Amino acid sequence: MVRIALLIVFALLGARHALAEIPQFAAQCPLGVRVDADANGTVRINGDIAEVRIFNNNYYEARRGPVTFSISRDAGSRNVQVTFTGPGAVNGVCQVLFAGNGSGGGGGNQPGFPPRPGGGGGAPNPDFAAQMSRVAGLSRGDVLNVRSGPGPGFRTIGALANGDLVRNLGCRNEGPGRWCEIQMMTDLRERGWVNARFLTPAGAPAVRPPDRNRTVRVRFEPGRLATDIVDRLPAGATVSFVLNARNRQFLRFNITGNNSGLSYRILNPDRSVLNGLMPAGREFGGQLRQTGDHIIEVRNNSGSLQQYRAVFVIR
Image 1 (cartoon, rainbow, N blue to C red):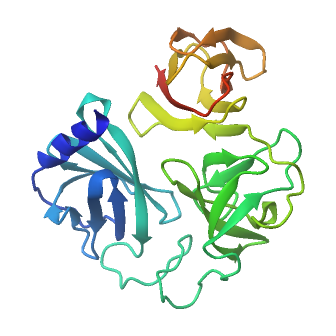
Image 2: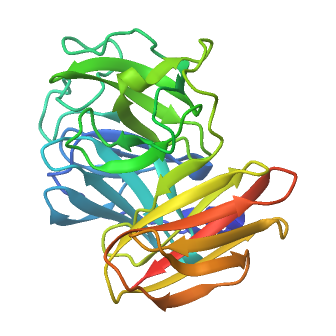
């Protein structure tokens, strides 16, 4: 149904005008939809000029009919993220294939960006490039933060555990550390940057036995109060969703899977229990009592791999 909805939505898209401040980029969205911006700041969706609205220097929205494409970049960087939202809660993440200079630029490499193929100076060292790597060397119970750029100052967009496999797209020295751009092996194939010292070639022995559990930070698009995550969870494994929220905010959460083997509980920032174990399909709704990172632990109690959809609403 989601695929059919996307096909209908994208078929209704119409052309509008552009905005000159958009950075250059090219992104591939589901069902073959391509979004790109040229050196003049013109945004096109499948070749048609889109209507663009600017909110600030780092966040823009491009519209075609009922679909909104959100284009964002980190302050002090030109790393670009593209997502889309349509009617009927249809939404998703687009894969950024290229990101270059801002409007009017010559297309050279920029700080915080991987270089364009065949580009000049500042290219990442090709060690590990386009190879599979494994996360290793983390302390027990710790996670490796995935960041939007090469350095600890960039925002966290995900997390990995010991034993997780990633595609290593290239590494570079940044300040006192070394950072690698990686592609996570999730359904969305999200990209980010991690500290190189926690990566080892996939064929090499890991420092610790693989940890099958994962931690994922929940992110909301600017101005939106709801989001969902679709992924798979191995038998017996746990995924911990990290949701930053304030005291007295209202949280709604639900998770559905392809059988009744999933369950969840919610922990406060001080790790006391906010809501005890509940089965998948039974929604939680209530007011939060603390400020900080709340943890929603989802466990697969079945004997097989389960696909799930987790829905988060915060007010």
